[in-house]
Length: 526
Image (cartoon, rainbow, N blue to C red; front, side, top):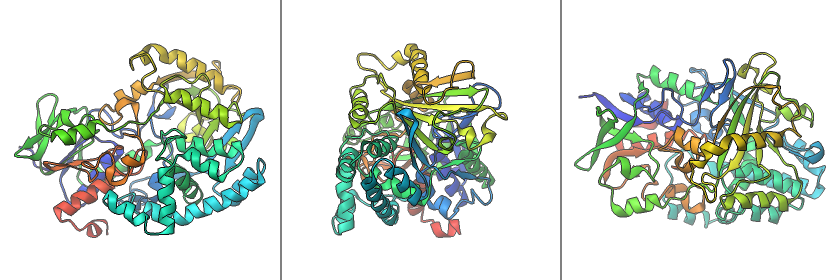
């Protein structure tokens, strides 16, 4: 019989975060990870050649910056376990034809000067817009890192004040609707809409407008960060914290079943038949679509609603290039300091929306929706001296119209070659004679890398629609990190509140468990 208090399925950053808090509370915790390495979607590896370090999935850490795990250093990740974030003065930028650039600086005044180059009225509108976003940020973020209040109570709370009704209105609308309300020029609209589409939402999706309200406040208050050495720096710090508190991780340990006895989760079974018990609880990174595959006896109605959870309408195709020399931009040197960078071969909203219309119908965009950059400009540790890495990110459907998802295996090299050509007007030296290694990840490869979280290639777990937010994420049944009818089973992952991306959301799962275990959270983090 194993003597663990808690066993956790999955060493992604959310599972690790929950494990760190539990271990810090004195619990004996074991994490079982199917891969040979930790991190899930927060991993940095040498994919092609030694010395060239690429982020497999997440690259920018935005939403975690408001998490008390970091702001209060609750786990001592920064003060004791080596987590070191790099913040650029240029969080976000866009390149348009003729090398026109629109730069969002962390400094609001400089940003408004940039916008005024295109439209003076939009610059003043943006100033008021971003200022209000920063003022409302404490309201918006106060519930992001703990278990959500019931959905109905949350809506009633918003509906009780003018500020709340403004947020409720934004949550109900599309991002496209909001930018059309507030701004005149196509450049600022494209610039903002592409930024929020990084949350794997389409610009005209109803119920996704909150991002437009949220992102300017985050950018100008916290900035956009990346761990020095790569995204996996967060995972490395979490592993050091977890193991220092007595936690254990077993790799190449694939779970195939949650053990249930008398309606209670008592452990996990590996695919080789080994059973490992947790005396006080089980934590599982299980997407709602696969929940009943691992957990027997789930109520049929609960399972039906879980399987009805909608994935995001688009996925990502990512290429990782090793370069002899660092990228050179036709738009100049300043643009290389941007943490997030977008590329547009047009300047009009009609073309922009036409490209997203292809995604909505499961079609490949002839003009790629281009993003990404060379992280060595801001962090030379990512490659040998003078060399570069290019992180190509394009939006693509998981299942191409008229094909099965497996079609990507035959098509991805062709897709990557055409995508590379479309970057070259912006980056003249992103050419075959400068590329010494490459690897490509299709939406199907994304799912394969984390089949129980990135279902249908959705790295954010499920779509960020209003009906899949707060206490209804992913469903009303599962929104409190528990499964009805199954005691002592807790859920963690990008499909849970607060959402996909790097949030450190395992903190909320740990808080829920602490409540059930009657553990004083403040004492644990003191």
